Image 1: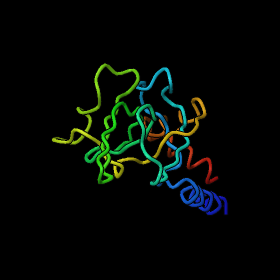
Image 2: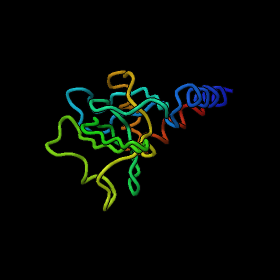
Image 3: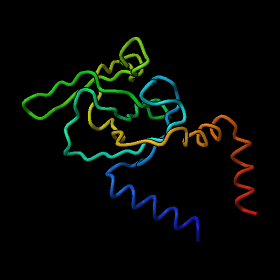
Length: 146
């Protein structure tokens, strides 16, 4: 019952926020001081909202498993409505072109998982611990099942 309630809440959040992933944990220090490793971000992803420079987005790149949380630093909009943009971590020296798939220099809206709308500090550390230490994940599941 608990699991199905949690699943229903999750699916409801997906509908309300417009994002396939309404929350995401920050996995690195690339966005410090804005966000720290382990912060839990709340996302929305309404397609009609334009992407603007300065906005913090979460995006997925082909060939990478984990989403990336970085700031939009440049936006190119064409008259036909096509929008491309470039991202960079606040704590990084260079833009993200080296993180994109080979031959890709810009992101498009289809690459965006969501946009940061709020956060809870360090709450996402549970996710990081479970990814870094799979045995902890099994122990947690065993305790919850008992």
